Image (cartoon, rainbow, N blue to C red; front, side, top):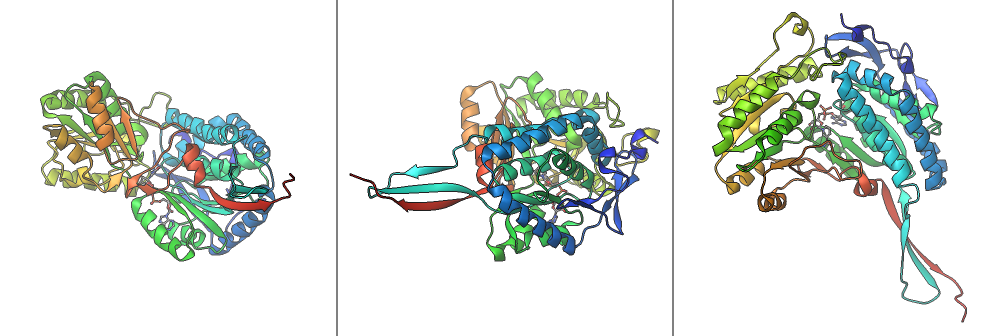
Length: 494
Ligand code: NAD
């Protein structure tokens, strides 16, 4: 038994409740929350109902009317207090993330830094922002203003891979813009969201502005999306879920912001610094056990450097310390769930059937400590071709197919050949190649000779089936507001 089996987060109490208005609401039935490192259940999360969604929506609508009257600097002060609470409880929050999601404690601490950064950016960057524009009117004695206004109640739906940070990524801009939020976290990792909500409450965020209803996507998520009080929907999750949610929201004609799946290509040109490329390719493939939408999902290497790259990548990937995520020295934890692990095993199996060669890993790591839990070893597939499923479909696990290319045109063709368009990576020593590729890649994000994580002041957004809208920075903030045009006439005097 590892320490996380008995983990009972003090922040959430013995039996976690959902936050609806000011109340922590428990339910007669709960959904087990599992430790991915052992496969054992260590907590139960409330199983919300459509009635809970109604109650949360009513609380949110009520609170939002008052919040919208507060100025940006006043709202910013409240969010700055949230940053303070996150700081105070950072280690406990990180341990909740580890316990239910399985990433290493080092990675979880990084995620909590991200939680802080999202609230901090909302509080500091938007505190004294312009809240509209004045446009020259046609006639004297008139004012023509385009004002920024909050949307109302935001329905937010989040995934399991960053169960705390993605909550903050939505709460920060939504709240500073004057909205209230009802959020449904992934049913696999509900506790981190509840903990973030608790920290908001401790910081003095007015009751009803942050509500969490836990439960399954197609019930609770759908009830949020189709609720008559919902003014806007923001989702991070799979392309499948995004499509269903967009369809469900269509009758209400409300804005929907979608951050969906990715299949990032990692291009290594012949003139790349191979030390840099290998190290970054490894990190961008295996961070969070391969469960990041920006992960290096397929590496394309110029044929002249292919063998050398594969050998060096395998050597480096072999050295990754896979183990108990609460261990300070662990570099990679387990997959989040049995279903996710099995999905990855199936993808590797199919890749082998289609002709790829497993040159590292391929299944559960060996050793007693990996018998329970959802472990998958760092895996490398050589001899992969661009048409294989493993190269075309999102894997979301620690498996890298490496594909050779012959020239620039083929590299770009391969990179653009999937339905996804979120993140892309280019490694080259040539400025012309870097700039050409930046222009030619059909992706919302291009990293040249570096990898993420993305900056909070940037703009994280997918092209094609990777999303609609986008998060972070000024462009992300714009998703959470609407405009009101005001024509005003006054006696101008002579
Ligand atoms: P998922 O789509 O299974 O679930 C995401 C959330 O949507 C969950 O809360 C789920 O309950 C809910 N949901 C699912 N179907 C729904 C429906 N029909 N109606 C309403 N809600 C519904 O995704 P996941 O497995 O939790 O997360 C992994 C996926 O998320 C990957 O595809 C990954 O690429 C993507 N992701 C994208 C980004 C990004 O910024 N683009 C970031 C993180 C993860």
